Image (cartoon, rainbow, N blue to C red; front, top):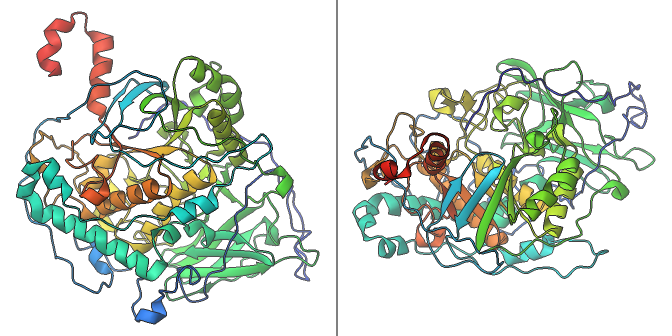
Length: 610
């Protein structure tokens, strides 16, 4: 979803960078900038030299099978790019062709409960949401029962570290995917399409198990891609298959493209290792600006690292700068409070951090934590859904034109400020949901993923299929191996690193259909949902990400924004569904706003509401 506002000015930040010389003896201590940020570091493992996966994760390796799953570089001519990968058995060429019918949207909604007790969810299979507006109240009735999660017993001094528990949980293997026909016998007519969809999901799970050591390991891409820190230095890796050469540049080496040349493996992953300085300090100081310079088919291009976890817009500059964010231990925020139990009935306060102040300014994480969260608690909400977290250079997009997917928006503060906000919400017993955007990406080439390696097919479909004409944005290729790694790792990153309690997935309708729901009316006729217009790769990704989230974080909540009424949307993946807990149907919110604003006599609108 995209909103536009005129007259919005970008905020500026104080200049924090110093101009320093680059040491000719290889010690970069003098080529640094002022340290002003904070970060929680992770334990990293070094990737095998010639592999885009972690060879230490599991014994099932590429060498053992002789088969390699590599990022595809061919054009996106086929309707489903899942078949680009090499599997042990051949997948069906296409799902059956079915007729699309234009009509209006229909959604089954369940009665909304209002109790405020935090108990385990009910066993209902569908959910509904009523949305008033951003910074407004939402209520949901639970859909899809999840197992009870383990809560850590903590004291005020205890560090909250769930990493080991999360990894030990694992993700259950795929089920049979047949229960959907018991739940809804009308789906039997479309068994060919639905069984094909589930077979593609199972093949992807099997391939990930074989070549990556499982979905749990695959979703930790941030432990090997981007910048990773070890005891001896910093490793930087980037997937850029279209680049002909690459170098890491930044404040730390005076932007010298000849200082730190990267090497490429057969998967299109570029890599460089920067050893510590002679005094043991990191080669790249905390707070340094960094970019990757590539010689591409489109010419020389400087890009912000795709896995960057912080970026800033400097005064008098329009494009953002990637920031190496690795503060000393004493400056990193440590979580003190466990996650709240999952409420049976959600009452969600939807909010935009920047717009949450009564003053004419862009508000901050800290102010929201101290001033807004207590009000939300006092009003009786048990969940807050935060918009515009992922970094977006265009503020008027309301956060929906994401440029840096792993970076929290710097307009509102630092990553550690955001962590303190979430920790405070947990202290108050408030569940924190993130408005996550995996349906499209910003069209920006200077500070976003678009044309990252000089080609239009890196991360996205090439040609017209990779462009959303209404949103002016790029569309992900969900059948590409490295795109799956990137997006699955992104979802886990926000849950694991920042302790979010779930997501509202934006624009899911656009993902699930090649027509993106544009100029298409949905009546509820099942032929509208199961045919060649369905993007099976995208639906399989949604099944994988729901599998990942619910497997590793049993109390996590997933809400999908779908206006089409896709059947099986809120049925668990193992039963053949897409796996969401709730469906957010915007037509309900729009109708509610219409009633509040324009209708004086509700009785005359009853037929219209029905």
